[in-house]
Image (cartoon, rainbow, N blue to C red; front, side, top):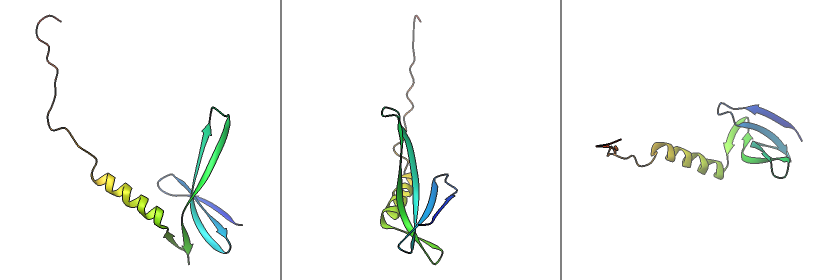
Length: 90
């Protein structure tokens, strides 16, 4: 098995792994479990390389579409300005 790890502009470490002659691309996620005193890591496969071109899988495409949709509509914004006014003794 061959491993290539390289960073992408969004600072999420990504790498490739060759499985049965097919080069798959994955995102690497590691975290510390303080209660149990050990580290854990996972690989999330996001697609594969075909002739040097990245081909994303369905889950990765849906995740990218969801992130793009939520960035377009950030959520409700209050149009009324609320202030607290105190009159009299302070």
